[in-house]
Length: 415
Ligand code: GLV
Ligand code: MN
Ligand code: MN
Image 1 (cartoon, rainbow, N blue to C red):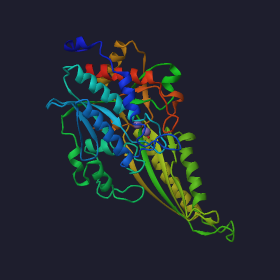
Image 2 (tube, rainbow, N blue to C red):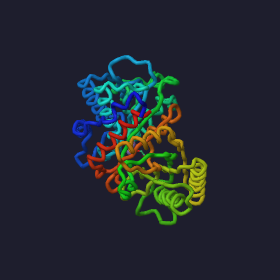
Image 3 (cartoon, helix red, strand yellow):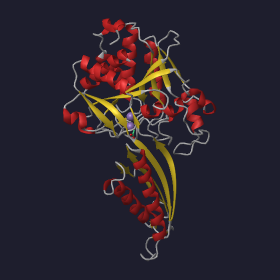
Image 4 (cartoon, rainbow, N blue to C red):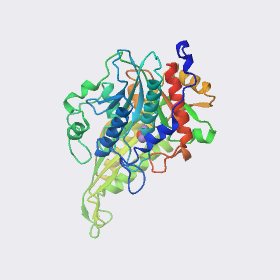
């Protein structure tokens, strides 16, 4: 710890306060079927931002929404020091958990409150960010907010949500502007480092009985959308050997995508999460299928080869079965390494608090990997019970959440 901060060695997060702030978000998107449905750029995500702005105001912090819809919370005074940004996202997948992303924002806010109350003289100005639309569940641009601050957003003007409504409307409602998203980009040199704390979303820490993960690398991800076009025909009168059933071909493609990861081991994971057969009637042969392929790996060369293998197999299936298969790559996010000096700060913070830690790989994507293009990043994990996430059962013991916030706090002191 820098000498000037030695008097702050005993600082701790206020766990009761942090958990109460976290619970305050439960109403923003509580799903009657269980879990949380707080999709990016919906009124539920707006409500979460509004709630945190009220909390920030109550504790004398200032907040603003940038032009991309990101919530930014800082101390009230004006500072021209480079920022130490801490945060994550508030949006969820449909029927997701209460912690994915949200915990990282709330822990960062708790750390900012402690640093502010104790007037800790940091080298960098601590700032909290809640990135908009990390999941991309409703507006299919995952990492929207972090791409904007990194100045890497593809042309946003034509972006529509899954109902075809232009994003410009929801972005304006959130407090941003589609014509000015480039103004959300962080000025070069303005951010010294970015720290993200997140639930692990996997089983490693729980199985090892270790409270803290120090992430060394984050997975790369490619998303491909397919349209399989066959012929919509009568399900009773069309002989089985005279069909161009789009869903039957799509099913073969689903299995091929699984095999590329599972059997051929060209990449670490391959998932089809979207499969819509149209017109969707029991007595009609599906004429059109829209489906996704999502592949992940820590090595971008392997990921590119896996992508090529899937696209080649799609073309082969189209030829063999006489259907059309159109494909469109809608996202490629880079695998990244975290910054060793920041990892060292996390290890020292954990050591200071008497906590065991593990070096870890992240098979989940995080805003940090996008921010890595413009600032050094680090990611801290806390255990996920049963390794479950992107599901209503997602859970981390409250004491582990508080422990993680203390590690974030003491990491911030060491940056
Ligand atoms: C992030 O939510 C991911 O899908 O990895
Ligand atoms: Mn997620
Ligand atoms: Mn997340």
